[in-house]
Image 1 (cartoon, rainbow, N blue to C red):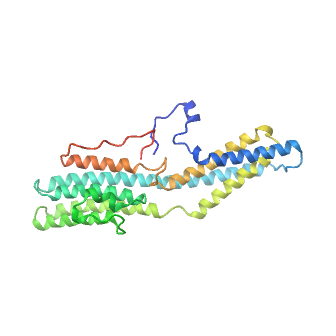
Image 2: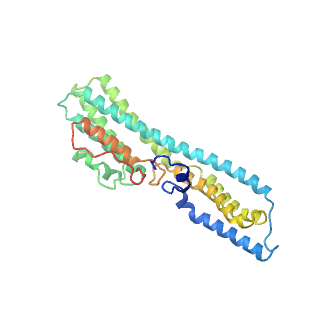
Image 3: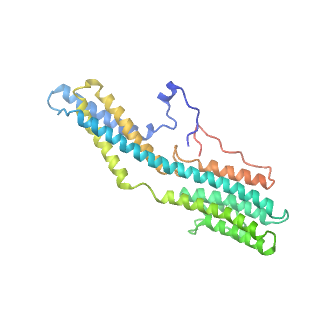
Length: 304
Protein backbone atom coordinates (compact mmCIF):
# COMPACT_ATOMS: atom_id res chain seq x y z
CA UNK A 1 0.00 0.00 0.00
CA UNK A 2 1.31 3.46 -0.89
CA UNK A 3 1.81 5.57 2.24
CA UNK A 4 3.10 9.07 1.58
CA UNK A 5 2.27 12.67 2.47
CA UNK A 6 -0.10 14.24 0.02
CA UNK A 7 2.03 16.21 -2.44
CA UNK A 8 1.26 19.73 -3.59
CA UNK A 9 -0.44 20.44 -6.89
CA UNK A 10 2.81 20.37 -8.83
CA UNK A 11 3.83 17.11 -7.17
CA UNK A 12 0.48 15.51 -7.98
CA UNK A 13 1.04 16.16 -11.67
CA UNK A 14 4.36 14.33 -11.77
CA UNK A 15 4.10 11.73 -8.96
CA UNK A 16 4.90 8.25 -10.27
CA UNK A 17 5.21 6.20 -7.06
CA UNK A 18 1.78 4.73 -6.42
CA UNK A 19 0.50 5.96 -9.75
CA UNK A 20 -1.19 3.64 -12.20
CA UNK A 21 0.83 5.15 -15.07
CA UNK A 22 3.53 2.42 -15.26
CA UNK A 23 0.84 -0.22 -15.83
CA UNK A 24 -0.98 1.64 -18.60
CA UNK A 25 1.85 3.62 -20.22
CA UNK A 26 2.17 1.24 -23.18
CA UNK A 27 -1.57 1.31 -23.86
CA UNK A 28 -1.67 5.10 -23.74
CA UNK A 29 1.29 5.30 -26.12
CA UNK A 30 -0.44 2.90 -28.53
CA UNK A 31 -3.55 5.11 -28.59
CA UNK A 32 -1.45 8.25 -29.07
CA UNK A 33 0.46 6.59 -31.94
CA UNK A 34 -2.74 5.44 -33.62
CA UNK A 35 -4.19 8.93 -33.30
CA UNK A 36 -1.00 10.47 -34.73
CA UNK A 37 -1.08 8.05 -37.67
CA UNK A 38 -4.72 8.90 -38.39
CA UNK A 39 -3.95 12.62 -38.17
CA UNK A 40 -0.97 12.28 -40.52
CA UNK A 41 -3.03 10.35 -43.06
CA UNK A 42 -5.78 12.97 -42.86
CA UNK A 43 -3.25 15.78 -43.40
CA UNK A 44 -1.41 14.12 -46.29
CA UNK A 45 -4.53 13.02 -48.12
CA UNK A 46 -7.76 14.70 -46.94
CA UNK A 47 -10.76 12.44 -47.20
CA UNK A 48 -8.73 9.25 -46.84
CA UNK A 49 -9.64 8.92 -43.17
CA UNK A 50 -13.37 8.98 -42.34
CA UNK A 51 -14.40 11.64 -39.83
CA UNK A 52 -16.92 10.35 -37.32
CA UNK A 53 -19.37 12.65 -35.49
CA UNK A 54 -18.38 13.50 -31.93
CA UNK A 55 -21.85 13.20 -30.37
CA UNK A 56 -21.94 9.36 -30.17
CA UNK A 57 -18.52 9.36 -28.51
CA UNK A 58 -19.69 11.92 -25.97
CA UNK A 59 -22.58 9.69 -24.98
CA UNK A 60 -20.46 6.51 -25.06
CA UNK A 61 -17.72 8.14 -22.99
CA UNK A 62 -20.24 9.28 -20.40
CA UNK A 63 -21.75 5.81 -20.13
CA UNK A 64 -18.35 4.12 -20.01
CA UNK A 65 -17.16 6.43 -17.24
CA UNK A 66 -20.28 5.66 -15.20
CA UNK A 67 -19.84 1.90 -15.59
CA UNK A 68 -16.14 2.14 -14.72
CA UNK A 69 -17.09 4.14 -11.64
CA UNK A 70 -19.57 1.43 -10.59
CA UNK A 71 -16.92 -1.27 -11.04
CA UNK A 72 -14.30 0.67 -9.11
CA UNK A 73 -16.80 1.24 -6.33
CA UNK A 74 -17.47 -2.50 -6.12
CA UNK A 75 -13.72 -3.25 -6.14
CA UNK A 76 -13.08 -0.64 -3.44
CA UNK A 77 -15.80 -2.24 -1.32
CA UNK A 78 -13.84 -5.50 -1.53
CA UNK A 79 -10.62 -3.70 -0.56
CA UNK A 80 -12.27 -1.92 2.36
CA UNK A 81 -14.01 -5.09 3.57
CA UNK A 82 -10.64 -6.88 3.56
CA UNK A 83 -9.09 -4.03 5.54
CA UNK A 84 -11.90 -4.16 8.11
CA UNK A 85 -11.44 -7.90 8.50
CA UNK A 86 -7.73 -7.50 9.20
CA UNK A 87 -8.51 -4.74 11.66
CA UNK A 88 -10.86 -7.19 13.36
CA UNK A 89 -8.09 -9.82 13.38
CA UNK A 90 -5.76 -7.41 15.21
CA UNK A 91 -8.53 -6.64 17.71
CA UNK A 92 -9.39 -10.29 18.37
CA UNK A 93 -5.70 -11.21 18.75
CA UNK A 94 -5.12 -8.44 21.30
CA UNK A 95 -8.26 -9.32 23.27
CA UNK A 96 -7.55 -13.07 23.28
CA UNK A 97 -3.98 -12.53 24.45
CA UNK A 98 -5.10 -10.12 27.17
CA UNK A 99 -7.88 -12.41 28.42
CA UNK A 100 -5.60 -15.44 28.46
CA UNK A 101 -3.12 -13.54 30.62
CA UNK A 102 -5.92 -12.53 32.99
CA UNK A 103 -7.73 -15.89 33.26
CA UNK A 104 -4.97 -18.51 33.19
CA UNK A 105 -2.60 -18.97 36.15
CA UNK A 106 0.85 -17.32 35.69
CA UNK A 107 2.60 -20.69 35.86
CA UNK A 108 0.35 -22.27 33.20
CA UNK A 109 2.54 -23.06 30.12
CA UNK A 110 -0.53 -22.85 27.86
CA UNK A 111 -0.46 -19.05 28.22
CA UNK A 112 2.71 -18.64 26.17
CA UNK A 113 1.82 -21.54 23.85
CA UNK A 114 -1.57 -20.07 22.91
CA UNK A 115 -0.15 -16.57 22.49
CA UNK A 116 2.49 -17.82 20.07
CA UNK A 117 -0.16 -19.79 18.21
CA UNK A 118 -2.10 -16.54 17.68
CA UNK A 119 0.99 -15.03 16.08
CA UNK A 120 1.37 -18.15 13.95
CA UNK A 121 -2.26 -17.84 12.87
CA UNK A 122 -1.70 -14.29 11.59
CA UNK A 123 1.43 -15.34 9.67
CA UNK A 124 -0.27 -18.41 8.21
CA UNK A 125 -3.41 -16.55 7.13
CA UNK A 126 -1.40 -13.81 5.40
CA UNK A 127 0.66 -16.40 3.54
CA UNK A 128 -2.44 -18.39 2.55
CA UNK A 129 -4.19 -15.30 1.18
CA UNK A 130 -1.13 -14.43 -0.89
CA UNK A 131 -0.72 -17.92 -2.30
CA UNK A 132 2.41 -18.65 -0.24
CA UNK A 133 3.25 -21.63 1.98
CA UNK A 134 1.07 -21.08 5.06
CA UNK A 135 2.50 -24.10 6.89
CA UNK A 136 6.06 -22.83 6.51
CA UNK A 137 5.02 -19.35 7.68
CA UNK A 138 3.53 -20.80 10.88
CA UNK A 139 6.38 -23.20 11.77
CA UNK A 140 8.41 -20.78 13.96
CA UNK A 141 5.42 -20.14 16.21
CA UNK A 142 4.10 -23.65 16.84
CA UNK A 143 5.15 -26.42 19.24
CA UNK A 144 7.42 -28.96 17.55
CA UNK A 145 4.77 -31.69 17.68
CA UNK A 146 2.23 -29.47 15.90
CA UNK A 147 4.41 -28.17 13.08
CA UNK A 148 2.93 -29.03 9.70
CA UNK A 149 5.24 -30.04 6.86
CA UNK A 150 5.96 -27.23 4.39
CA UNK A 151 3.59 -27.38 1.46
CA UNK A 152 0.91 -29.08 3.55
CA UNK A 153 -2.44 -29.11 1.79
CA UNK A 154 -4.48 -28.96 4.98
CA UNK A 155 -5.73 -25.63 6.30
CA UNK A 156 -2.87 -24.39 8.53
CA UNK A 157 -4.71 -21.37 10.03
CA UNK A 158 -7.68 -23.51 11.05
CA UNK A 159 -5.36 -26.21 12.41
CA UNK A 160 -3.76 -23.57 14.62
CA UNK A 161 -7.16 -22.49 15.93
CA UNK A 162 -7.99 -26.13 16.69
CA UNK A 163 -4.79 -26.30 18.73
CA UNK A 164 -5.82 -23.20 20.71
CA UNK A 165 -9.26 -24.66 21.42
CA UNK A 166 -7.68 -27.97 22.49
CA UNK A 167 -5.44 -26.16 24.96
CA UNK A 168 -8.37 -24.20 26.34
CA UNK A 169 -10.34 -27.44 26.71
CA UNK A 170 -7.50 -29.01 28.68
CA UNK A 171 -7.38 -25.96 30.96
CA UNK A 172 -11.14 -26.27 31.50
CA UNK A 173 -10.87 -29.95 32.41
CA UNK A 174 -8.04 -29.24 34.85
CA UNK A 175 -10.05 -26.48 36.47
CA UNK A 176 -7.62 -23.70 35.51
CA UNK A 177 -10.54 -21.78 33.98
CA UNK A 178 -14.27 -22.00 34.51
CA UNK A 179 -16.97 -22.61 31.95
CA UNK A 180 -17.71 -18.89 31.64
CA UNK A 181 -14.05 -18.11 31.06
CA UNK A 182 -13.78 -20.90 28.50
CA UNK A 183 -16.85 -19.62 26.64
CA UNK A 184 -15.40 -16.10 26.55
CA UNK A 185 -12.04 -17.27 25.21
CA UNK A 186 -13.63 -19.61 22.68
CA UNK A 187 -15.71 -16.69 21.38
CA UNK A 188 -12.43 -14.93 20.54
CA UNK A 189 -11.19 -18.02 18.71
CA UNK A 190 -14.47 -18.12 16.79
CA UNK A 191 -13.90 -14.45 15.92
CA UNK A 192 -10.51 -15.31 14.40
CA UNK A 193 -12.12 -18.13 12.45
CA UNK A 194 -14.79 -15.74 11.15
CA UNK A 195 -12.06 -13.36 9.93
CA UNK A 196 -10.39 -16.22 8.06
CA UNK A 197 -13.66 -17.25 6.44
CA UNK A 198 -14.44 -13.67 5.38
CA UNK A 199 -10.98 -13.16 3.87
CA UNK A 200 -11.22 -16.46 1.98
CA UNK A 201 -14.64 -15.42 0.68
CA UNK A 202 -13.17 -12.18 -0.67
CA UNK A 203 -10.21 -13.99 -2.24
CA UNK A 204 -12.22 -16.76 -3.89
CA UNK A 205 -15.15 -14.65 -5.12
CA UNK A 206 -13.92 -12.07 -7.63
CA UNK A 207 -16.16 -9.65 -9.43
CA UNK A 208 -17.93 -11.28 -12.42
CA UNK A 209 -15.39 -11.82 -15.20
CA UNK A 210 -17.88 -11.00 -17.96
CA UNK A 211 -18.48 -7.57 -16.44
CA UNK A 212 -14.76 -6.76 -16.29
CA UNK A 213 -14.24 -8.10 -19.80
CA UNK A 214 -17.05 -5.98 -21.21
CA UNK A 215 -15.65 -2.80 -19.69
CA UNK A 216 -12.10 -3.63 -20.79
CA UNK A 217 -13.13 -4.24 -24.40
CA UNK A 218 -15.37 -1.18 -24.49
CA UNK A 219 -12.55 1.02 -23.19
CA UNK A 220 -10.26 -0.26 -25.94
CA UNK A 221 -12.88 0.24 -28.68
CA UNK A 222 -13.65 3.75 -27.48
CA UNK A 223 -10.00 4.80 -27.32
CA UNK A 224 -9.20 3.29 -30.72
CA UNK A 225 -12.16 4.94 -32.45
CA UNK A 226 -12.18 8.35 -30.77
CA UNK A 227 -9.25 9.65 -32.92
CA UNK A 228 -11.60 9.46 -35.93
CA UNK A 229 -13.86 11.97 -34.16
CA UNK A 230 -10.97 14.20 -33.11
CA UNK A 231 -9.01 14.30 -36.36
CA UNK A 232 -11.13 17.05 -37.91
CA UNK A 233 -11.82 19.23 -34.87
CA UNK A 234 -8.67 18.85 -32.74
CA UNK A 235 -6.13 18.81 -35.55
CA UNK A 236 -2.55 18.47 -34.30
CA UNK A 237 -3.80 18.21 -30.71
CA UNK A 238 -5.75 15.02 -31.46
CA UNK A 239 -3.01 12.62 -30.23
CA UNK A 240 -2.75 14.51 -26.94
CA UNK A 241 -6.53 14.51 -26.45
CA UNK A 242 -6.73 10.80 -27.30
CA UNK A 243 -3.88 10.04 -24.86
CA UNK A 244 -5.63 11.93 -22.05
CA UNK A 245 -8.86 10.00 -22.66
CA UNK A 246 -6.92 6.73 -22.76
CA UNK A 247 -5.16 7.62 -19.50
CA UNK A 248 -8.51 8.23 -17.79
CA UNK A 249 -10.30 5.10 -19.01
CA UNK A 250 -7.37 2.65 -18.91
CA UNK A 251 -6.32 4.07 -15.56
CA UNK A 252 -9.73 3.47 -13.99
CA UNK A 253 -9.78 -0.03 -15.46
CA UNK A 254 -6.31 -0.90 -14.12
CA UNK A 255 -7.03 0.62 -10.70
CA UNK A 256 -10.13 -1.54 -10.43
CA UNK A 257 -8.00 -4.60 -11.21
CA UNK A 258 -5.67 -3.76 -8.29
CA UNK A 259 -8.42 -3.03 -5.78
CA UNK A 260 -10.23 -6.23 -6.78
CA UNK A 261 -7.35 -8.30 -5.32
CA UNK A 262 -6.73 -6.67 -1.90
CA UNK A 263 -4.32 -9.41 -0.74
CA UNK A 264 -2.01 -9.35 -3.76
CA UNK A 265 1.52 -7.90 -3.78
CA UNK A 266 0.70 -4.73 -5.72
CA UNK A 267 1.31 -1.07 -4.85
CA UNK A 268 -2.31 -0.31 -3.90
CA UNK A 269 -3.19 -3.52 -2.05
CA UNK A 270 -3.25 -4.17 1.71
CA UNK A 271 -0.01 -4.17 3.77
CA UNK A 272 -0.50 -7.64 5.26
CA UNK A 273 3.14 -7.94 6.34
CA UNK A 274 2.86 -4.74 8.37
CA UNK A 275 -0.40 -5.87 10.00
CA UNK A 276 1.08 -9.26 10.89
CA UNK A 277 4.13 -7.52 12.39
CA UNK A 278 1.82 -5.46 14.64
CA UNK A 279 0.27 -8.67 16.00
CA UNK A 280 3.68 -10.29 16.43
CA UNK A 281 5.30 -7.39 18.27
CA UNK A 282 2.39 -6.69 20.62
CA UNK A 283 1.80 -10.33 21.58
CA UNK A 284 5.50 -11.07 22.08
CA UNK A 285 5.71 -8.01 24.28
CA UNK A 286 2.80 -9.37 26.35
CA UNK A 287 4.94 -12.47 26.98
CA UNK A 288 7.67 -10.30 28.45
CA UNK A 289 10.05 -10.51 25.49
CA UNK A 290 12.31 -7.50 25.03
CA UNK A 291 14.17 -8.34 21.82
CA UNK A 292 11.40 -7.38 19.43
CA UNK A 293 11.55 -6.61 15.71
CA UNK A 294 10.58 -3.06 14.70
CA UNK A 295 7.24 -2.30 13.17
CA UNK A 296 7.41 -2.19 9.40
CA UNK A 297 7.72 1.26 7.85
CA UNK A 298 7.14 2.33 4.25
CA UNK A 299 10.15 1.83 1.98
CA UNK A 300 10.12 4.33 -0.87
CA UNK A 301 6.49 5.08 0.10
CA UNK A 302 5.51 1.39 -0.21
CA UNK A 303 4.23 -0.46 2.88
CA UNK A 304 3.77 -4.20 2.41
